Image (cartoon, rainbow, N blue to C red; front, side, top):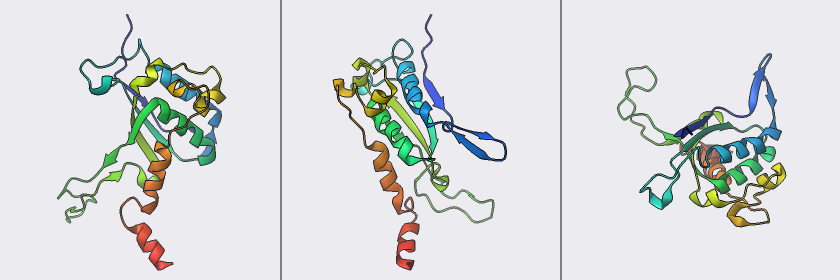
Length: 184
């Protein structure tokens, strides 16, 4: 009997804490991570939900990420976006709730990206239904270059992650970016 995976949670990133807060980081594990996510979101581990819009794959991947070395990590996100549609988790305080433990009530109901204050991201992703028919390249380099996506023998990339980064450059909607620019 094959068990179906309703959700896959990838906690934190590929770093691990060692000693006195020194971060050990393994960017060489990004391609195997992507390959693993592709395989465990493929049949028989997942299925297309009957009656789902656009034959949407039912399994959700929740992945958190903190920028360590953007130059080394961008290829992963460019390839990840080819195989998975993803979006950031957004959060906001409930209107009129006490957000800081004081007697003041919270009237700020702006939506913010979860993890924005720590340069972290939490994404919810679903496998792109069309990707279920693509050949997964054997080489890690080819996988991160986007070979095989859309049936292509040449590299491809997705710009979802870069777009999300650029959208967050203004202070995540709290006008700090505008205040900093005007103070300079």
